[in-house]
Amino acid sequence: MKVLIVDDSAIVRNILRQVLQEKSDIAIAGEASNGEQAVKLCESAAPDLVIMDINMPVMDGIQATAEIMKKHPVPILILSSALDGANSFKALKSGALEVMAKPDIDQFNNTVFYSGFIGKIRELAALKKFDRIPSGEGNVPLPNGGKNYRMIVMGASTGGPVTVCSILEKLPSNYPFGIALVQHLESGFDASFAEWLASETHLKIKIASAGDLPSAGEVFVAPTGFHCAVRSGRMVLEDGPPVLNQKPSVDVLFKTAASWFNSNLVGVLLTGMGTDGAEGCAEIVAHGGITLVQDRTTSTIFGMPRAAIERNAATHVLSVAGIADFLIKLAEKVW
Figure 1 (cartoon, helix red, strand yellow):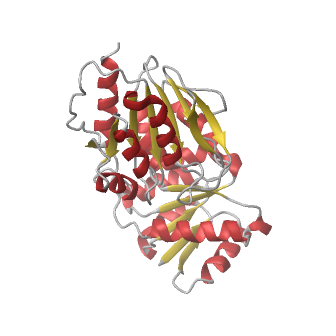
Figure 2: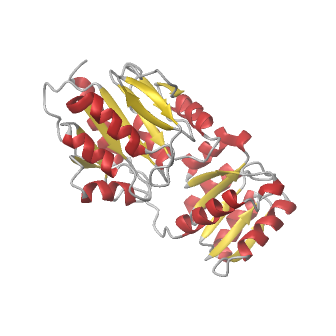
């Protein structure tokens, strides 16, 4: 595995080089101090993964990401300080696959950061195919008429931020259902993710808090570090152990919402590695609700959707465009 390091700080590049070279299967494809150099090195060095900073001279990480994805597509991991959250999500829209918070220099060898960092590198470098979300509309089956849906729950992981945004941006401000969302994010990026969605969509976006429940035209984003559940008709934040190594967990949201809303619930499970959300989809179906699961072609990583399909827990398997169309057609039943 060959990794290209892109950061304007020579100290950070040196530390990253040392961290990566401790792993015998990771080689350094090259180093760049700005985005322009990174674009050129992606052509000449053919890395398997790029670690990209945001704020750099000559060409910043957002511009470089867009150029690389146009000319020489390769998995890009944004390694940014938490203060650069909004720009990081712009980089995701430009084609980067994942965002991680850059720690203080003395924390690079912290066990928690190190294990997550190396794991993320291996996960993303293994991706050999880059299916961008198509602009065409999918074939959308019409929902059953007369169904009184009341709530939508969504779950996503790697590749999710852009996918979620591409769905929500198609929904109007007067969308008649509330939406609760679990997006697997690095700690500290939940607020910037919500702000980014608010700037890109017509909906009201906020971080979920205890006692709330999203109403028409609202999207509540689960905060990092807490499970978001529906108990007695209200959202609660639970500080329990991770479920399937995730906190927040898609399964927790889906299962608890299914127990309250029963057949009036719609679940949407999107791209991501692992199986989080599959059992939750099964629970929604068991209670009479429906589940919209992203198809293989438009998934960055098909793990989570595939797990739901294999459990016969996907009532509809649709493209990203198809999911958005389906949600709009549901709304037309109550407008």
